[in-house]
Length: 460
Image 1 (spheres, helix red, strand yellow):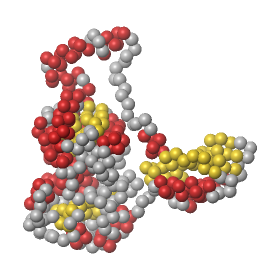
Image 2 (tube, helix red, strand yellow):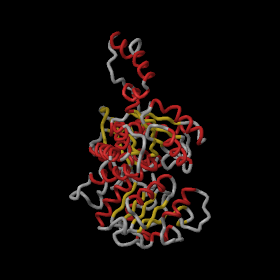
Image 3 (tube, rainbow, N blue to C red):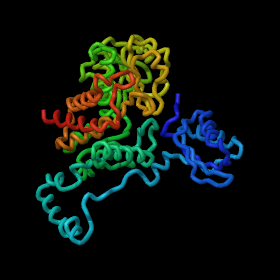
Image 4 (tube, helix red, strand yellow):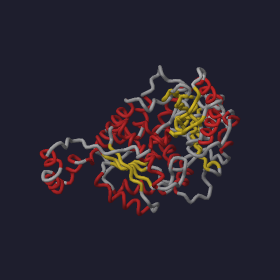
């Protein structure tokens, strides 16, 4: 199922003979092993030898080795070095701190730092609310993780989670001009995490919880929302739910179905699955069947998890009790936030006419998107190398931009629905088609529109 991706892009530096056909030979050898060439440059030229840099997308480290072997099989070619472009991007990290004010002379230092800064400190001590106006707090978000549920990699710990949190902070800045910083905690104790975040809160205008495993993430978010006076947003829950709802709104338009009429199967009842179900219900969905590893969740099961109990009480009105494969039969919508390769095209074929499939497990979805598209009217994934990427970056920068601008701490269901509707509205009726149900993450208006929707909902 894996396709060559920029996430596995490599550059190979080669020594090659200077025969006239050499560049076409190199490109053909790489293409022959299924790696699209994205750049080919001659960095050095001599009478009988060339130094060539060839860049291509691969599927894995093993595929990269196959590319190198194919090139070395050519007469006179030797691979000098293979560089992984993703690792090169991450060298030294992806963030830096840049002052917003000039520090050119003693006059600047006297105001930015001592002695002038003491006057600002005294003003905040007298009126703590001034911290939001006179410090970074007004525009700063903590991206907090314990490394227990990172991407699809699982419990890899805080240090290994740092590249993801750096990336998240970069996205905040790029798309909404929000200054964010990674806070990777070396503890997975619920009470300790809550205590640490509360102690850090004076610096920040908001907290974005990230990649914390369920069910601990639910309690951590609920407690912090109750005990802090700044917004706390668990992106794996609410960001995913917002973008999923936005995509579903447009997909249903395309197939001329209404959310209150369709049967929706949700695979995965962790953080994202729970939030998606809640937001779908808030939008008017009536028939949702949630499945975990054992099959459909329904009343009568012996459940100890409070969130599964809530799902059993609020979904599955027909009390369906079969497997995921059985649940797909006749369903209109599949939403997957679970595990890779759970079913094939034969199961998609059993779904209702004009079915919608959102297979969002990363990096490998629940079903092959290309094969699913043979039977479903609309297919979406969480990947950037297929159409209709359901990507949280469409939500969280604008959500926090709006929360910070509105100066509110409470995040309501009305805000989440408003954000989803704002994202969906970025795809016009003229643009809407089976390969374009959700705007590009690079649409500069998305974060602005989401922020405006949050502010309007906050002031309603």
